[in-house]
Image 1 (cartoon, protein in one colour):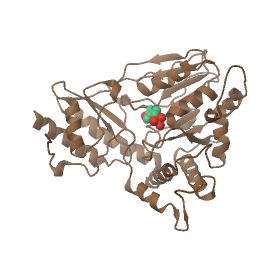
Image 2 (image 1 turned 45 degrees about the horizontal axis):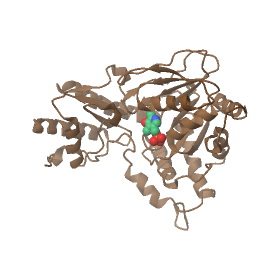
Image 3 (image 1 turned 90 degrees about the vertical axis):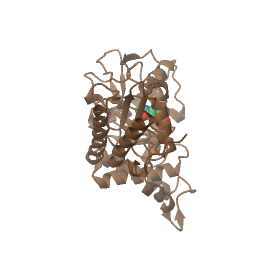
Image 4 (image 1 turned 135 degrees about the vertical axis):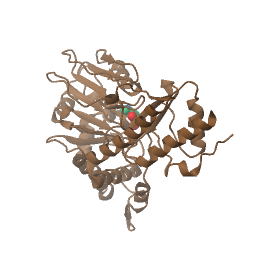
Length: 375
Ligand SMILES: *Cc1c(COP(=O)(O)O)cnc(C)c1O
């Protein structure tokens, strides 16, 4: 039985997924107009000037957006953030990493370094889902790793270098980059994918790398011993290709076109300050609404740790969140289910820059309607 939500309550666009996330119409249009009629881009060589020019726009656009410090470089490759965990395992960790884990994604990177036969077991600083684990200074590690925004739980952590000597800090900013404030100087690798804040398709990884990170990769990859660094996982190989505005192997050109368009859109609107302010406004709407309802509670207890890009709201056990999510879907309001392994009676809302803040407010009105009607 479909419950029809009054159309006056519905958002203008129903995409609230946490990744892949809403793609703006202009990004899709950019696919149709990429290149010019005599030199289209889609379906042409990624080694020629046209596609390389798109990669150049992505690299210079990101450098601009993140106010890239001197000596840092924008590196990219195929395989998404999941592939980057393996790149970092193969090319950046000397002996042992320390991981902050407070959800699925942080834990997956910890599992990757644990599996590597040439590395010592990692140190893991763990916190329960719904809170944040903070890295702790250790002389026994040479890499620190933490999510910036834990997409599975909706908790965010500031990007801050722990005290230490020459450890590298690797920040998984997959769902935060481009919408959370950051001083890139505070980290050595700030990596992400195109399918969250940047509203493109998945399949690429992008990494802002410090000079120390690039030196480390050169050192580790030439260190020999038991370590095998497949070419696909070599950060120095990715760097050589990126410097020529290309990738080691064939990228999805459509993803690059949509990504370039989104980076330039955010810059045109006012850059990181604009996008982070817009998302914080949407988040204030969502969390403020949850706090004002007796049957809803923000999952992340500490307001400072509540993500301003992915909001998680627990519902009272008397309300079946999966039924709410199902009715929303029937009405075209999509993808607000919680992270599957978290298993909570919850909705999760992507509030990326492409999502209109008024649509977040509309979503809360739709949930109110369903809760009152289902009652
Ligand atoms: C989505 C996500 C990933 C995985 O990204 P893929 O591109 O699918 O590999 C990793 N980390 C975080 C924080 C994410 O949100």
